[in-house]
Amino acid sequence: MGYGMCGAQSATQTPTQAIDAINPIRFFLQMGTGPGGGSPHNSCRGVTYSTPFQAWFTAKGNNTAGASAICMLTASNIYAHLEGKVPVGAVESCVSGTNVAPWTPGAGGEPAGALWSRFMVPIVPFTFKAALWDQGEADAKRTNSTWYAHEFPTMITRWREQFETQFPFIYVELCSEYGALEPKESSFWAAMRIAVKDLPDVGFVTTTDIQRALHPPDKQDVAERLLLSFRKLALKENDVVTSGPELLNYTLTGEQSMVLTFSNESLVVKAGILVGTEADCEAVKGHDSMVTFSDVHDSKVVSLNYTIVGNQVKVQLPGVTGLIRINSDATTCFLYSSESGLPAPPTVVETNAAYR
Image (cartoon, rainbow, N blue to C red; front, side, top):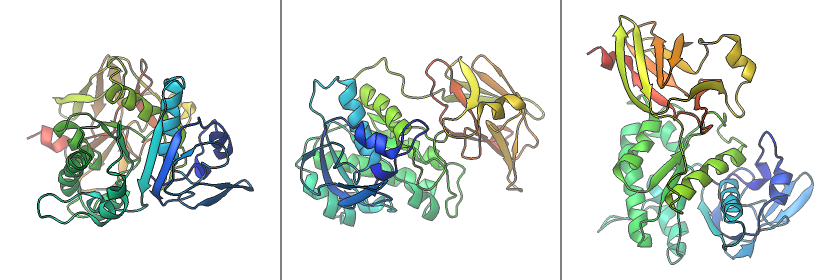
């Protein structure tokens, strides 16, 4: 979350262009640490920008560089969507490389997380329309999915209790699973989505087709997707589509084939925003890395042959005990909805479970 505007680089916009294009939102930097962010003085291409700390300021070209790119760009997008007719304010409070637990308020006699006490308590008196969350790498590498699936919704619930409001909570999915410590559950993305299932007004954006790094620079495209979720959850624009086709179910159709049924009939495979090229997907039609398989006894990842008919993807399996991954961090081509242009959220299917 603390990745600064100084590094926000998309396929169509440089950091300098992003900074110069920021709309005049009101911004409050309570705390921010991360690559290119947090420092009161940042230099982008030789130009020094000064970002005020713990004071409200109006964003403009000379003071935004040290702010969170996710926070600043999303707020700027909201301002543009509202055509500048509604004042928009954003507050950043983040520390790079942290686990979820220190951000969790205490309940009853429980102690509060250290980061919550230090960096969130001072902003509890503020009133918020929504909360944005971009975190998880540290937990994916150091803890495990089962633990996070409990801790994450607990944190959201307690935030709402402390702020005394059921504000929408929108998080950014990890661009890679990173590989949790033992036990190595099959999907950290699924652990994050428990919050969506268990709590009201929780949304997420998929990023596997955009980003490929511990500190990916393309925050512009992520912010565009965050705007969609904000419009639906916070502004109650119910007709807004916020996610690509989601997996509904899967069934075996033979010895080594499976059909996966999705929620949208406009399935199409193409390259991601920054990952791969269109030629990668066209070169071997029907056999690319949109859908991959890894055997439980072999960590090698292989691409699967597949066909798409309507809202179904039929895949040929090389074995019966393994994991099918759709739109995972191993892919260069992705399953999208041609109607919304959004990718299917990364999905993991345990094939051996279907054979039981």
